Image (cartoon, rainbow, N blue to C red; front, side):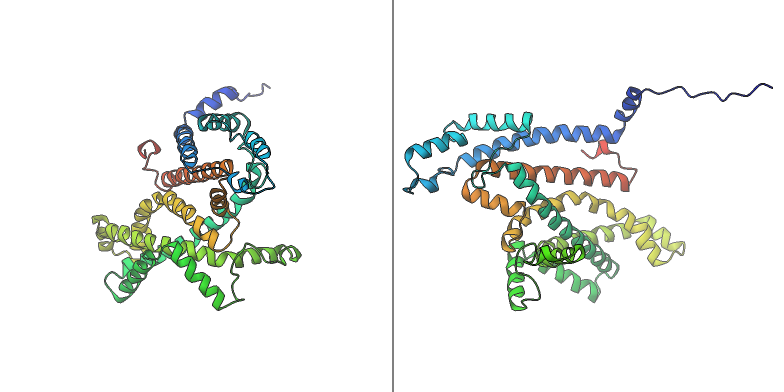
Length: 351
């Protein structure tokens, strides 16, 4: 009895699978953004390097008045750090090391590789930024929805006043107010730092709670201004959608108000909010420079400020480039999230 044989599918080579994958719109878009980001980072690094060079003096100026450092020692240090070369040659040498060796240089102040310092500080900044981002959206979106649904009612008026007050208080003001509050209720909230002095003696859950306890005030300082603006945008977008004809049609069909608002209207109002993800992330990173300094949070912002004050050239450059990379990645993720949330939007049409 002859056995029926199932026709075998022609084998697809790894190269053919790679070609199919490369034709994907998402992959092509990501590659395009990576090329744009590379050019942006190159121009930003050149501009930042030469702007930093405009400041008078260099890192060694603080030692020139000390009798412990002879002119010969200072000249040797200048040669060691490369500060005796013209600015354009310093930049080209630094750029060559970054591109071909992944070496961002040696920190003058810490006498450690810059990349090691960044690996220690960037996770702390990302933790603070994501915590503030989560709190901002968990507060702003519901408040914006409630404000839009209760348009021109007392609830709406109260929420609008709160949003105006929040937008009128930048991070520098909210940080100071929260510091005064922490001092007045001490030891309820920690005044600064990322962990307590007993952090190493705690178990894993205690360490998690300890870090979260120290996160509360810095997160609030970053979130207050951000949630106020996002609340107003949410309210305006939802009100605009609620006036559309298809919303009136849905109500005429007898759908409940909750279904009209939360299923039909909110799904269409959320798209502009997703586009704000990248800008919100950029704002949080910018605000973290002040917040981290106020609350002694060991993050990238505090490290960059200290490096600028000490004229630690290569540490400043690496910090600025890292911040730029985080902003570019944040905007890319926002575009991808927008395309995922609404299949009607093509990535090729975003830029």
